[in-house]
Length: 471
Image (cartoon, rainbow, N blue to C red; front, side, top):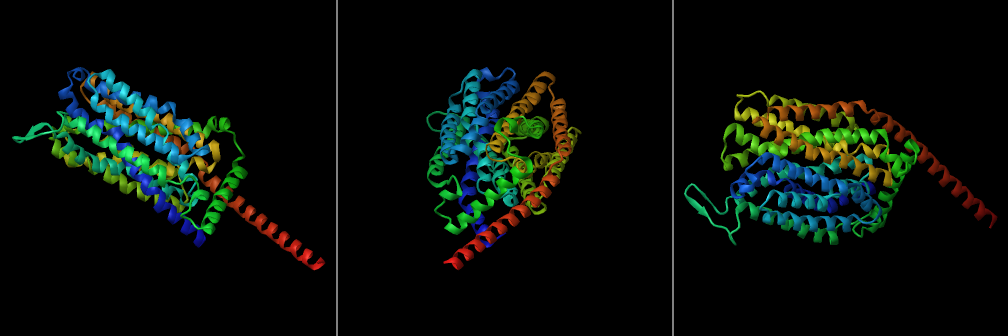
């Protein structure tokens, strides 16, 4: 890597990733803080008492129905129009709608707000994935992804304890009355306060995010030229290796569909565990809110470390498939072992930490796979499709745990199905064999393009010499 290219990438890291990182933290909290809020909502809303777990699981299903509708259009908007303006729109609308969860009093209110929140947030995650491919070459892409994706475990790490102080409002604890403003309950303030940063960040992104390297006045002309040249060469290489696929051809590509199915199974496990872990720990160990929120910080910390290691290792070795499949398989085993009852709380937290590593550490390597064989709109649309199929799993996972808990009174069968679902993802990824082949083909095409560029430069030089001699 040349010094100019390295300098441009470092500047892009510092300019773009902090904003996107903060935005994803808020997005993850606004999407998932219901897992803690429901512990208090059921005490204040009588209509939520019957089939409580099913109600909240259905709320997550309708969120992902809304999310699904705008996934592919959102990624195409980022590719063809403006990531800056689209992400700004997403954040402002989701911040407002997330805050409106505070006015819920009936289950149908809850379903409507969750559906609108899904519509508002749709396109953010895959849109950012597409956006990062506009800035970071393949050799640094998994690292850039990992620095963005770690926002999810960090959100899980910091939000329980912060949210705990909101939930204490208007409650009596240890003989102390915690007063709140405007006679709102603690869970209502939690939704409102977490929604405000999304609106603020949306406005900041409109003014500070840059769509493409050519628009970046914070890059020198030489840095911009080198970075755009590298990204353009990668586009040509992918077309040399895989041909130029139309959007429709890419959406029907067998590898795209298999990646979507694989993502569905791992997202099923991820959201099932994320949404019900507070309830599982309280149900099994009868923990108070204070201790529970401290313990909930441990699994995401493990996922954070795992994600950084996988991202950097995947870029260093330029290997994606095993860096995706192996962490997921280890996480599935960890989740399955939680079914052995009568284990100590410490052992159970360790096992859920292993499961959390499996459901998140694979992400940087996984999202580097589509761009190995697709480019431009084909890659953008395919990333949207993969995330759309996966989003269905975001509704299925909570439904599996919620319905089986309400029907059987136990989480056993639900957790077993989530563990099997994660194993299926690992198997599918291992079946897909394109990583090494495409790396070799890309290397060959790079050499050919480099030689052809040198030949063209030599021909131009000879012609200029001949013309000067004639003169």
